[in-house]
Image (cartoon, each protein chain N blue to C red):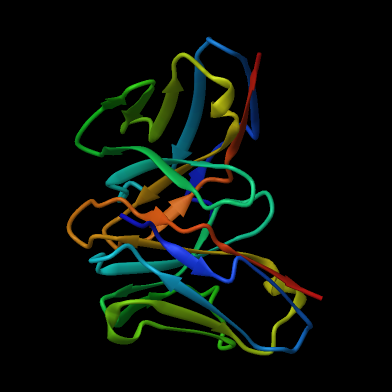
Length: 111
Length: 114
């Protein structure tokens, strides 16, 4: 049962433009959401997180939006840079501490 | 400030052999997690520890898998009688252990079972 879904397997964006990554979840018990970035042959690197009591969190070029009623969150990267090319994973946590991950979205930033 | 480390980074073994992976969490992190990632998928939870206590095991963790965290520091994940389906990236993560803390991942161990 896939509780976290990233329906876009890939995204291509021009350097300097906005990247928008989407994530949907089904478990209403999730209370904490995270985005990770992963390069090939490396472990996931934490990017940004948001608690279920908030609807927005911003950190530099990265902003995460949470819409609890729609069970949807998104990650905005502005402006996109070539170093942002990677696989991005959405993850969600309920009170049992383990993370449930989406399948990932591969972002390619074109020069 | 060192991050989570894992050893080895790569392991090739023959079907039926036993393998053991090690994870060293970030110092003073009480929780330690093991995940498995296969191609095209996100990481899947296997098990986690609060200090030395193993608190939850996924149904993905068959009887051939065992994990330990003696003394609440490093952890080992052993796979006995490996099968080709065990080929995956095995990821370790750690967190402080208070509230909505973030899990920080190590570089992973890539296992290939021939």
